[in-house]
Image (tube, rainbow, N blue to C red):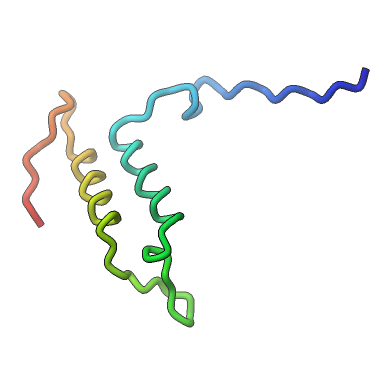
Length: 82
């Protein structure tokens, strides 16, 4: 009777158990993109990020800013165009 132990279920406050806020979801999308995008992660010989232009990164950053500037009613504020 040497059965493998079953993993414990996630805690109630884990991301798997609760819905992400719009701000959290936008941040996760941005982080996942950055980790997968060769353009965003490009580095010089010394290991410094090259900050190359990436359209997807720009769009996800705008989505994150919009999510951060959403008021308590869930309606976005009018943000100036950059």
